[in-house]
Image (cartoon, rainbow, N blue to C red; front, side):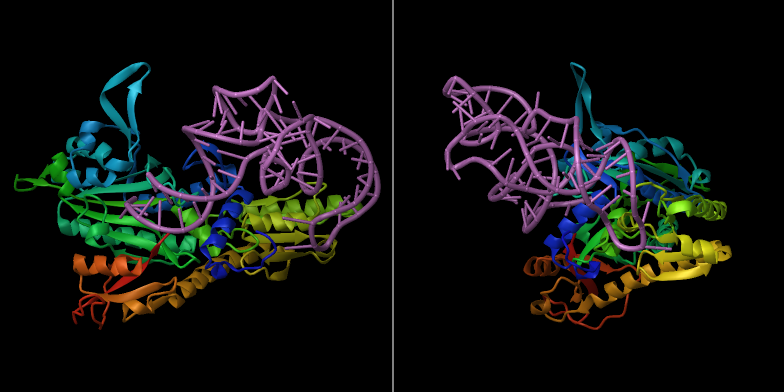
Length: 477
RNA sequence: CGGGGCGUAGCGCAGUUUGGUAGCGCGCCUGCUUCGGGAGCAGGAGGCCGUGGGUUCAAAUCCCGCCGCUCCGACCA
């Protein structure tokens, strides 16, 4: 990283950002990229705990909303995979195949799931008999495999992807719409906890999920001025139900196709957190999901060493009992300065420094990772203060990122205005022809229109149609 | 998928041009002194030079293939 002092939001230079990102994910011990298969990295303990905590947040929402966790097999037979035409077209080029077992060729080739629709839906046909079986709401957290880009990147562009996918079946299209609203509410809460403000955009026809009726992409803005999709919510209507013959018997005894939705997220959430909140000192983790929320650093010397360590143990005990994930960096032969840098590189939200001064005054020195401010409190207040600071930090991180997003969304009324690395709000008549022209001439993607909709007065940038909608144009990460 | 750069100790690199004893810094181990923002000294361990083949008396070094990393573009949920 050199000695350059750059805040994350100054890293608009993508080359600089890439170097910084690659360095920081390994220095913070999230991941080890030295595994010799491209696009497949090792989750180190610290990174895996972070992912686990994020997944736990997701799980608690799934429980709350009546989803049940399942785990389907990794391998899918070729003939099941090929039932939904658009879906195959979307994924055909990027599936890994298993064609051999031992020395024998398999009768039916098997593929590693690139997503699990084609694994699950043949079974949904068996599970769903009547309207009493609906809604069916399940989810799983598994790895999916996609042989896509050559330009892989830890967490954001992997070939083995740690994936969350919720799948639902409903009686009516409106029930499915309601499900999508529920998904977006969950997303809203997760966005707060992960400090990832975002745009919920209804994707263009040519950018929707293969096989979907429509897709809502959830995008966060990286310091480079590019949007990273962190979640996808899809309305399938009966597209897959027809391909997999998933029908239920309604109260009148009629057999009807179910309406389906999916909601997907991945380790990209981590990529977004790192990119959006990291700085020249390392990563910065949201308190809600940080593997270590509080790190106590004893600053010992001479005879008072054991007293200071006892003092630290007491603080740790109280914070731990209050439910915080807390540790003490009691390594010997490592000086405090190194411990500070280490804590910062790993993005630990709260640091508590304890030396002779604190010992004498029965106080604590509390340092927040995001802005680095130090505060002194009485040691009795430790639990209360840490709780306050964690809450404040979550809010501050969110609003800082929200400000960045707002400042980098600009209206463009002419193609020639579109030159910077920003999110442009433009007029678009909605036609594919105009959309593709705009994408081509600006070298950017139309990521869609706000799911919630919005008032907009403006002309289509391509054809000049007065009744244009607001669309969002940006480069994709 | 196209194009560039790279692969030498855990990490960062020199050595490759011109073939001939594998080096430096950080980290690691031992000991002593240190300790409020990356400690100092002394001693020590650690290498199939990515990998497979070729040229040669001799290859980290030259040639070819493959694997991986990285950057630009294409593709992409």
